[in-house]
Image 1 (spheres, rainbow, N blue to C red):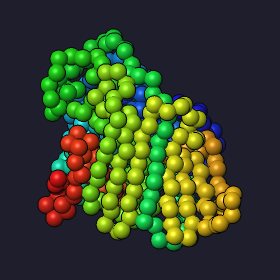
Image 2 (cartoon, rainbow, N blue to C red; image 1 turned 180 degrees about the vertical axis):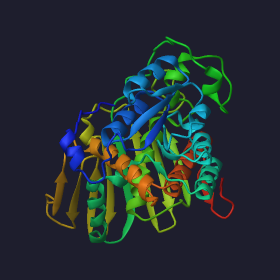
Image 3 (spheres, rainbow, N blue to C red; image 1 turned 135 degrees about the vertical axis):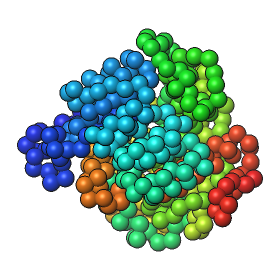
Image 4 (cartoon, rainbow, N blue to C red; image 1 turned 90 degrees about the vertical axis):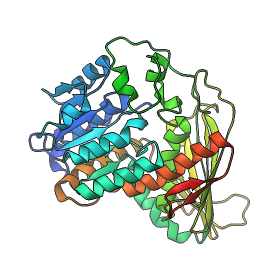
Length: 392
């Protein structure tokens, strides 16, 4: 995804009360230095962290990650060796989804705080293991659902009290994905380590570069984008695990992918509301500020929340509905990542809970895993909270 450059001046950094100086900021290790990992490394550095170690199993990614890290960062090809470094205070986990849980658990057991990309993990059981490890070690773990740290979304959430009873939330993320990349391997790759506990396959560049689109490692665009929107819905609605989830998908229109890029998730929640999320990545191409929307249909008003703004529509019988609140901040979304990292770094110092805890992350993760189970089985999947498992 494109990212608008937003560089804070050294004077602004010095003036910001929650920004750390690189000389005194925490020493952070990056695990997984693909595109997302390198972006996070640059943001951590900008806020004041010392990204002093980088780990990746693919040689070109490791080299690129070292360039994005702080000067003198140490390279690793095994994340466990990075965790052995007692000078590292926190780690960033930006690997494929199927590695998230194991790395978070190992990191907190090694005494590190963790910033982990969404989704929290790849299975439901893993999520409960992560929660147990985090709570027993008393480490700070921030899940990368950055809307929770954005002032824009925090302000938008305050309007929920004005819209009345909400029994329906509808949402979508629309854009156009041309296809999978056909890149070839151009350096040493520790394929066995990269696969981890996933089902074993021969070395496959398509799987490696497009892991997002294979069941073994992730859940495709469906899960990657739903992780953000479902988390937003649960946050705004003060809800946690669902009652049931049903997911339907179209044909796979991305050659080589296993997971459809066009699908709808229907969610039933115990606090008496239904929610839907539709992914459609064979639609027209949108400017990013317009590619997603969540609509909270209240009995007194409707609240529309997009990527970079929100609009409140009071109940009206007029031909043209007129909003009472209309906030648009094009280009603001990049700040959400920075705000989320800043919250994490602040919590490292204060030992307070971050804005996106592992419990919050797993509440969303349960919905996502249920959606994949429903999509693959063709059945409505119910959640049994007392047994902490799904049922059909």
